Amino acid sequence: MRANSLAFRLIVAASLWSALALLVAGFILVSLYRQNAEKAFDDRMAVYLRTLIGDIARQPGDSTLADIGNLGEPRFEALYSGWYWQVRQPNGGAILASSPSLFSDTLDITKVTGAATTSDGIRSGALVGPNRQSLRVQDQTVTFAPGRVLDVMVAGDAGELGQQIATFGTSVATTLAIFGIGLILATTIQIRWGLRPLDRVRRGLADLRSGKQARFGQEGLPAEIEPLVTELNALLQSNQEIIDRARTQVGNLAHALKTPLSVIVNEARASREPIGAKVAEQAEIMRQQVNHHLDRARIAAQVNVIGALTDVGPAVTRLARVMNRIHSERGVAVAAIGGDDARFRGEQQDFEEIVGNLVDNACKWARHRVSIVTEYAAPKDEGGGRLAIVIDDDGPGLTAEQMAEVTGRGKRLDETKPGSGLGLSIVSDLVSLYRGKFELGRSPLGGLRATVELPAA
Image 1: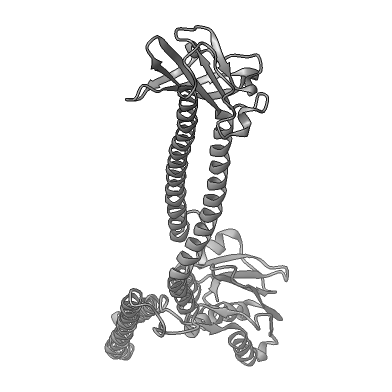
Image 2: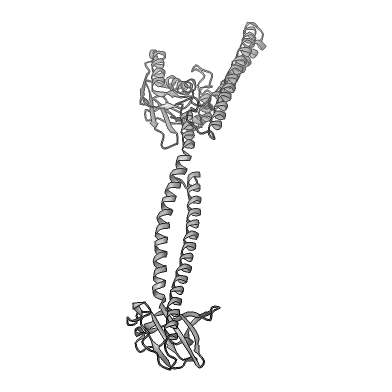
C-alpha cells in the first residue's frame, strides 16, 4: 500500500481518530473511577470517624479513654498498616488515645496538606505518616460536654488507593489498546473491501490498454461505480467512432486525389514539350507527398486505438518469407530469430510497415545476409513491456552523416536503387507516434544495423 494511496489516507485518518477517541475515553474512564474510588475511600473513613466519635461519646467524661477497639477494621491493630486513628486534646494538646497500629508514633494535624472542610466541620487532606506512608486523613473537633473538647482523627492508606487507581488505569489502557488494534484492523479490512471495486476498475483499464478486452464488464459493480464504468464504455465507443470516421475521411481523400494526379501525370507524359516532363516530375512528387501525409494521418488515427495488439512472431516470419522470395534472385537470405511470445501494442498494419520498410531497405543493400532479431521484455507490475527489433545486413553500411541524412523525407543516397525515399521517414514517424525509439548504427555483419523499440503487451 503506497503512502499516497486513497486506502492509506483513509486508514491513517481512521486510525488517528480512533486513537484520539480511545485516549479521551480512557482518560474519562480513569478520571471517573478515581473520583468514585476517592469518594468511596472518604466515605469509608467517615464511617470510621463517626464510629470513633460514638465510642468516645459513650464513655464517661473524664480525661482518660477506655479501650476503643479496632472500629470494625482489623488493620487498625496491625502495626504500621496505614490505617490509624488518634484522639487528642485540641490545639496540639496531649494525645489521649491512638490505634495500636500507630505504636509510639503520632499524627500531626498541622502538617496536613490540601485541607478542605465540609459543612459538618470535618477536615480532610493528605498527610505523610509513619515510614513515609502517604495517608488520607479526616479530622473533626468535637465538643462532647462543656469543657470536654477533643480532636478526633482517622487516617487511611492513600498508597493503597493510588495502587487501585493505577491498576484500573493499566487495565483500561490494555483493554482500549486491544480494542483499538482490533478497530484499526477492522477499519483496514472494511476500507480495502470497500475500495476493491476501484481496483477492479484499475485492472479493467489495464486489460483495455493491453487488449485483453474491448469494454468494461459491469456485472457486480457497486451502484456508485457503475455510472463511472458506463461513462468509460461510452467514451470508448465514441473514441472508436471517431477513429472510424477519421479512417473513412482519409480513404476518401486518398481516392479523391489519386485520380486527378494520375490524369495530370499521364497528360504531362504525353506532351512533347519540355514543360510536360517538368509537370510530370512535380506531379509525381506531389503524389508521393500526398501519400506520405495521408499515411501519417492514418497512423495518427490508429496509434492510440485502445486494445490493438499484434502477434510479433507470425508477422516477422511472414515478412521474412516474403522478402526471401522477392530477393532470392540476388542470393539474399533473410533469417528471423525470436519474438514468438511477443505482442506489439498497436495495429498490425503499422507494425508490418515499420519492419517491412526496414527489412526491404536492408535487403536492397545486403550482399548475402539479413538478420531480424526480436527481443521482448514482459510487462512488470502495472507497467508495459518493451519490444526491440534489430535488423542487420552485410552491405556497405553508412557513415554517421549518412545515417542522419537518410531519415529525412524523400532522401535517397543512391538513385539506382528502387523506391521513393520515404521508407525510413515513414518508419521514423510511425515509431515516434508510438513513443518508441529508432536508431541506426554499425552492424556486426559489416553493414547497417536498424534498431526499433516499441511498446509491448
